[in-house]
Image (cartoon, rainbow, N blue to C red):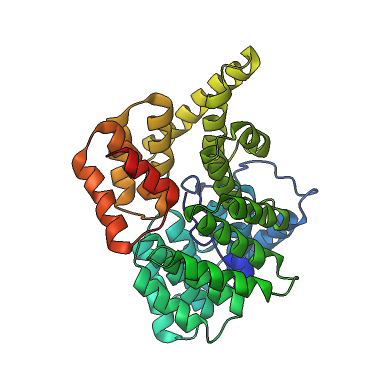
Length: 395
């Protein structure tokens, strides 16, 4: 999944979204029991339960709905469980289609829309907020991230530049580093980000984790793998529960042929589909070592296949990148993987999306799809050592 809004909640103390792994489920009956949550071990879930109880008494009160949606999104980011996103959407139900929703509700609504890849819908909500409140920092930050996911880097940079006047240095630097690093100046983006990190207050752990994760990704794209690994480890020390961060580091380790480390990192992360995919990919590389490892891999592979099948049946399009990776790496069906990668590329355009498109095009021997990747790299002067290796090997 994409970086999307990640830890931006901690940057400006308002809602952000995780790279979700499934379409949020909204039950028809508010009394339906979905799962008994570990409230005793996670006080934030107990707080969410109390907030939802208060909202049930006044469901049209935005002052009660916004905190419920915000904390549910936090829980989704921390746990990788998309059902919390369903709770957030249920809290916002009275305003889900309203053009005159309060600004705080609009930001949360935009966050949830982008979580299901309705990026245009999210941006429309954010455009409305910024038109009325040009200095709304959260809206600017959120829109910049959505624009970056869509590959509209110049537009994203403009929003980050506006943010620089109203937000702390590390927020603005991290905002700008994402689009700048993907459009020809990864080195400059990295230097600016590291300089801002060196001056960031130590108390801003969540914000620093977000920034270090981005620094790690930029370093990896530049081929500076030792620095990338150090940054990933620093970010994980700051926030071990961030599902996006775990996935990004797992991908980095897979590229370094460190499958055993991925299994150790993700052995308990089987409820989050995106992380489960990385675990299965790692297990596939180790499957022949012992009968137990082989048996575990086969069981996990079959379960993951069933999850993708269920997602397709309910019309969930969020999984396309992950499913393309699964189909290519574990089923060996290059043509179907390419179709999934192309459908995904039409919606989101991050380096990981380009990579699976290039890999599937290579495997399928599709020169036209390959030219799409070549053209994107040339047009944006993209620096990505691993991707360029993939592209080079396809020549």
